[in-house]
Length: 630
Image (cartoon, rainbow, N blue to C red):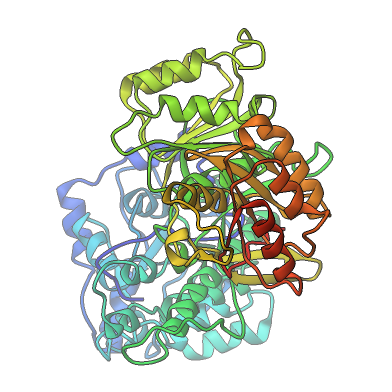
């Protein structure tokens, strides 16, 4: 595997961060080479050689000198049986008796010296490729280059280096099968006992700016995945390592001689296959998108793999009897897409399953608004929304959002689309419920794009449990995945905004510009309310909403009840058309004093709705866009 200029951490489903270490491993990391030793090690490195000189060179480097005491070979697992056989003097891969080999080929070179020190002290001969070999030599280690092992030069600009029987035979041979070992003996191939490989930085390359197609293709690793898969398949005999964070535990087990644990080896093999699988999913996603020259396809692919990385094990799921975990989507399309998944938590208890759902709902809603806005969410529904002008502070928006439904707001999630400063933080901390003007408002989460230093300090003082999140604005054009029994539903995200619609006047009554603004605000709020959804709004603030009712008239009644007398002269928005008008939702809204109704239209009885509004002198706007939310 060739070395690329940049590095990338491996991706894996349920990736476990194994950072445990022992004092014995730490001491290995601290042992340093003397200049004379470094010179001795460097002398073993060279390019292609004739077979005899290769054999002599490998034989002379069977024991690597280091400044730390040598650990007895009997303390380590997988002393290769083939090394007890005298290989052909003219065969590639010939190794001397007692030599154990570790193949190292890395793009991500974190902890490389720790790894090389530990393996050297345990008697392993280091075999390496390209930039990794160069880095090891520079650090003073003795290295056998892969071309010395194969007696074949690197070719095709580095595309072919490790794809050779001297490499894959040494990895894949089963030590418990006599026929495999005799084949190695016949061809003079030594076993490879440890494979440490991670892959070209394809993800970071194709997600950087101005990357042409050819550059992307050249960053598709071939030899690396082949070695990883081979070692993982033969994990009983070969230890495969793809994550630099695993080096301390691997070295500790090798040093203690308990590396034969099948559960540990299977876990490493699982991680290796997952590493390769996540890598392949990124390549497949990228190639599907760029299947046409100069044009990116927007079609859904015939098959889809989503790489997920465990971000947090949760205490429980939606209910205490359900297990749960939170995974981050590492698909290319989610790169720098913002949202709650990549948020930073500054304070408070750890996030729960329901916290993530509610925070996501609040953040997605507040990011829709251009003006400074506060959104309060309870059980994924916005129960309070208010916006202010660009030059106004958020204090009033926060107060108005809470007053829309202070009972629901208590214990809810508060989201802002602009920075939280000292003044706003103090108001959040001290604000009393409008219901009794005494009870201090309690929230589960506050989320914003940023906080001033003083604002964050004050907000932390509200409660030890208050979760304070910083999130990046959610990007448009994302995909939406949702699971059903035995499958997944995929759709485009609902990115329509009032600016994308016409709000066509269909009644004799023409609304004022102020009423149109109120209707657009109500419609944008309604988009984030569970169906059947009705929102009543005025002056850029939600007055009431009805959500999740099986019939639309009940949602309307709940919204009007919350709005109270303020419904008079307000705007009303519906997520879908009204199937009936007379003695139903439309007429009831008109009687309540609503002055403009925004709805998609499309019902067989649209004319009834228009006639009803004309009778009561109410304006009606057709958006021609439905916003169901299930």
